[in-house]
Length: 617
Image 1 (spheres, rainbow, N blue to C red):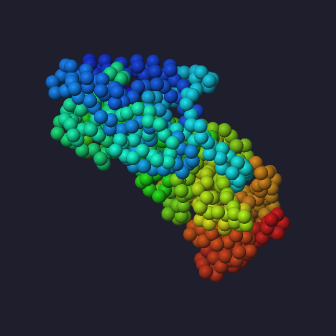
Image 2 (image 1 turned 120 degrees about the vertical axis):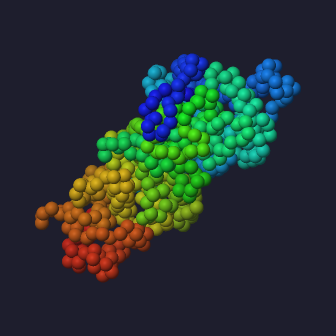
Image 3 (image 1 turned 180 degrees about the vertical axis):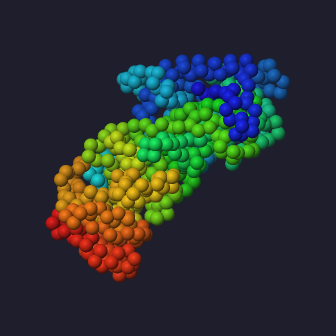
C-alpha cells in the first residue's frame, strides 16, 4: 500500500481544509497500487536478521531505469536531448562491517542513508504477514546475509544473566552513498548499482523536467505513481518550477496496559522510502511527525493518505550524545517494523499546524515489547536529569526477546577485558555493555521498570567499571531496583498517572516484600544470584511508605523519606561494601539531614539490613 488517498471529511473542521475528491484516473492509480502490492506480498521471504518478512519491489531510482525513462521521453517530448547521458548522483552500496565499531561509523554518517533490507525489497506490515504462510523453510528465507559475526568474550552479567562468550550476527548495511564522497577505505563494501536521485541533480537542471522524468521512471519501474519522498522539513526548499511539496503529518501512540489508554511514542525514527529515495523524521514529545512528499495524486490540503512507514527502534546517533539501539537477541541490527499510519496533507510551508487535526495511529505492542523498552530508554536519556546519562561508544544496545526468561526478567551484560593483573581495561570494556529484556508476559509498567533497572546497572558500570567490579552485588541490585522504581514512577507521572497510595507500584521494582531473612532461595538466572540482593535499601530512603505493617513483620521499619536521588547516586558511586554504605547512610540519615528521619527511626530501619549482612552476606 504505497499510497492511498481518502475522500473523508472527518478532519475538515479541525484543520480548516476542504476534503479532497479523487477523479477516475486517480482512483485507477490507487487500484493499481493495491493490486500490485497484493501480488508482491505472495512473493515474500523471511529476513532473519531483521526478524521480518520482505517482498520484492523494484527500486525506481537506479541510474539504468532513469536513463531508459529519459531516452523514452527524448523520443516524444520537447526539451529532452536524445544524446544526453545521465550521471549517477549516488551509489547503492552493500557494506559488510566486521565489527560493531565499523557498523556505528557508517550509521553515524550524516550524509549517508542506511537501510537494513535491500533497496529492491519492502518490509511487510503485520497485516500483510498474516496473509502469507509463516513456515520459515529454506525456500522462504532470504539467502543473503553477512559472513561476519561479533563475539563478546568473558561476559559477566547482572540479574542471573549468562556468562561466557556470546555471539551476534552483524548486518549488511544498504547505504545510499553520494558519488562525490570518498568510498570507505577500511570497511568492506561492494557497489551494487548506480543511483540517480533527481533532487540531487536538480540544481543544475530544470526542476520541471526532472519532475517529468521522475514520474516516468517511477511508472516504468512500479507500474503506478507513488508518493515521492522529498526532503526533511528543515531542509526543504522550493525552486522555480518545482512541484509543491506537501507535509504528510501523523501522530504515533501505543496502548499502555497499566494506564488502560494510549500514550505518545516520542523520539522514534520514522522513515518513508521508495527504493534508494529516503526521507525520515523523529517523532516529537506528543508523537507527531512529518514526512515531506509530493504527488500528482494529491491536490488538496486535508487529503488523508496512508503510507508504509518504517519504524526503527534506535535514537538518531548524530543528533545527541544520548544513543541507543533496540535489537533482536541474535543480531546487532536495529529492530524495525513497517506500519500503515493515516496522515493528513498540509501546506508545504505550514509544517506545524493544528496538532488536534493530525490523525492518530496506534502502533500495537508486539511480542518483543519494543514500544515499552523504547519509552523507558527514551525517558532515561532524553528526559530525566536525576542521574548521569552515560552511554557506551556507539550507544547502548538493548536486546529484546520474544521468549520468556523464566525467573529472569532481564539482565545487563559486560564483556570485561582485564590486564595481566586482573584490572579492567576500561576503554575496551565500556564499549561492550548491553541490556537484555525477556518477554515474561508482564504489564507495560513492569517492562518499563525492568528496562530502567537494567539501564541503572549499565550507567553505574559506565561511571567506574573498577568500582562496580569491586562493589557488593547487594548494593548494585538495590541501586538498580531504585532506578527502575523511581524513574519508572516519574515517567508515569509525566504522562498523567496518579499514584493511588504509598503502597501501590506500577513498575514492580519497589522490592517491598524483601525481609531480613530473604536469601538465595529461590535461585534465579543462569548462574549465582541471590534474591536477597534485591532490597528496598535505597527505595526506602525516598518513598513515603512503611512496609512494616505489624511489630512482628520481618520487613524493614521504614520511616525515612524524601532523600533525593542525587544522594542515592553519591552513595552508590562512593561505597563498595556494607560498612562504607552504612556510614554514609548514617550521616545522611540524621546528622546532615535531620528532616529525613530521627536517630531512633534510622536505627529501627537499618537493623534489618545489618541482620541480613551478618547472616546471609
